[in-house]
Length: 306
Image (cartoon, rainbow, N blue to C red; front, side):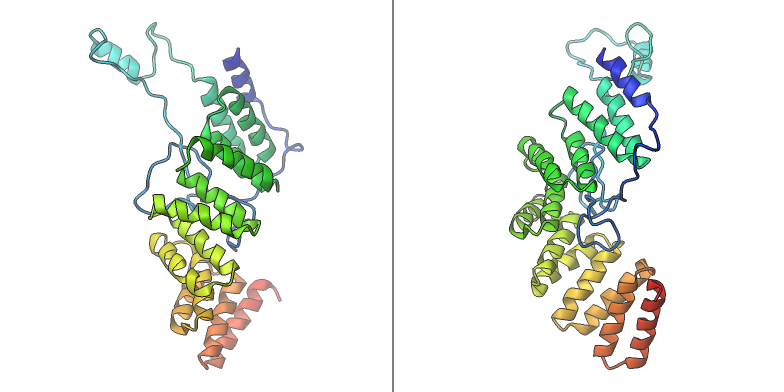
């Protein structure tokens, strides 16, 4: 019965007038490249400790989907014939019929597809149904938190992430998500606690370092922000916002050559952000290069449409 209901829900078409497109996934606060209310990590596959960049950019969201597998106990089972092995590889059951996907798998697939189409309300409803079937499903609850945050329900998102961490206290993706929302809500001490724990568990997590840098920038602790943001760009050199905020921090500690280099890299990665060119102009002014600064200010105004 549950499987049939799940299949019906998964197959049900969305009504365009009922659902609105959500914001693009990205970092939840201070990132000019993304929505201010989007979490960095949508979980769609089983978490692994990554040795290089985090996802965020995966965009941030991080995946935890596992394929359905068939475990064979070779010590206790009878002989497995070649034909049986072929059947297992093809997903065919013992009676020669293709195995139907579980209800949870159908719901996960439907929720992902709804999210990709921007049908946030429908995706939230599907994740809620999935959690009724499997209340311990951390990835579904994390992704529901992402959608709640996008809809403006930060408290609901935090409640969902709290539940995730009760089940899996060292889940780096969830720690970064919760820290990001706490930072957006200006609960900086709590945000820093989560983000420090995330980078302790996974020192190569770029999102954790980036958000730690943002928290310290928000607190005007410019010198403290520099190492976090430097580490973020070392781990993920594709994020323009990390270079921009590194430029901001270096400007405030009077490292003008470093700030200029960071701002310029931000403009190279994303040449459509007026504030990036304005930052370059500020540093050129401080370096007594007024003509070049004027060009950057002019470019900033052109991009901003002024």
